[in-house]
Image (tube, rainbow, N blue to C red; front, side, top):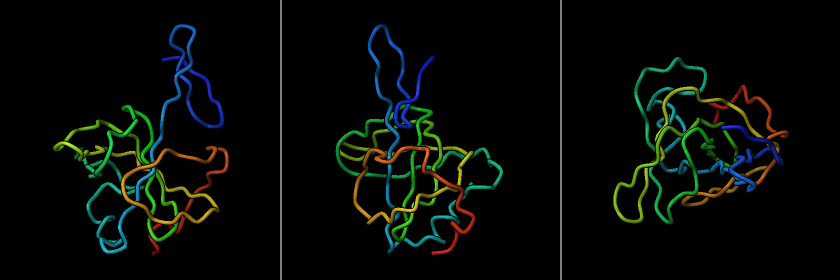
Length: 137
């Protein structure tokens, strides 16, 4: 799909209209724990095991398509992202964001307070930087 970048977001060219594609941001609850989340599998820097992994969220249907990024926040820090493979409805009002491998550890300088559900990425991709210590709570 041909496209262009605007503020770091991909704009798909469909006819004469540009349609903004949405990267999403989700939060791993502090009570779940960073180590437990990492131990689920296929963390950033690990080779893909062939497994698919889901992240469950409640609320409105997420505005995301396969190939777009799902960013993860834990303990006020952006930890990285993985490309979405599939969006699956688990039950009315509850969704699974499904990913495979290819997770990338990166962050931004801004602290991010945890939240429920999902949000669209609000920062330009240009400010993202590698996050070597992403495994530290």
